[in-house]
Image (cartoon, rainbow, N blue to C red; front, side, top):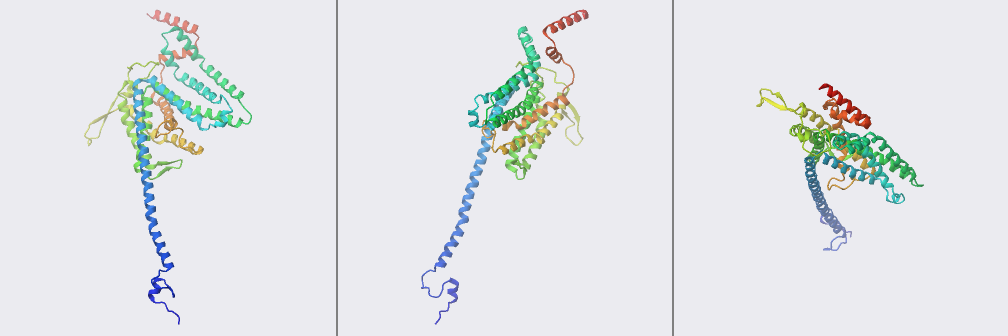
Length: 430
């Protein structure tokens, strides 16, 4: 007689001739399967939680390293500002050397270099030739004013200034000939790519950072304020993005967010207005340096650093407020530092992505290399120089300017003749 399954048997999934008390294999498999499915999410959640905790710890550890190195850099920077123009210039030169070293090494191939002895030396030859050309043009006036008391040194420096362009061109041609003579078969492509890369580095490093030195000697203010605004913008963008960042800003730099960008912009504009007033009270920062000495400076700050009173509406507790004209100019610098200068960083990010490396170097813990820190600074330095020359500097002839033209265009005998004629004119006037 056929066995008919009961409702209990159907519910348990057991079939006809199963021995009572013996678990069904199918049932056991299902039970084990259900256990596995219920246990798996717990393990995954634990793993994900551990990873999130590890990432969070790494995130804060990175922030602390970055903060510590930033504080050390700020301390050194403040010390150099106190020491004066010449020491700040020396700092710029050191930074340029580190930047050039990082950039030279980016596209370097060890196997190729071993077959080309002296090829690295050629890069540095072009580097120091560019340095002589750039700083010779910008600092000739300061150099002349420094050596006017020594007749022999004065004649030597006058000759160097007059023929400086020819000397630099001769050095460049010597490097060009050197490069041609070192060309080797099967290495042409590598050598010419390195030659082009070297010139691009010189353009990036000197065509922009040499303006920084010009700003220093127009007054430390015109170096310190733009550099501080870039640093403030960078720090503010980092912290606003760190704590509030949710919306990506640009694909070239995935960590940049709109929240960081906007928060940094507001912070930078406010800082520009306040810092300009603070720095404008110190002659050490506002006075231009006419020579290469390191003594204390005293000068008339001029109307741009003289506070002007502005009446306020009646509903404000204060009747008037004193604002320096330089503070309005500082807003223009702050706007550029907030909106345009970050594109120097975006350019650097795109460049690094193109060649598939994270940082230009590892000289600064938590920040990468010097080039990673200077990408926006170089863009800002050029703007600060052009803005100063266009909207701030008084366009008049000074004794230093006339003296520079005399030294550049007249021989020593012609200078002596001019001196005698001026003496006669002054004698007649008396």
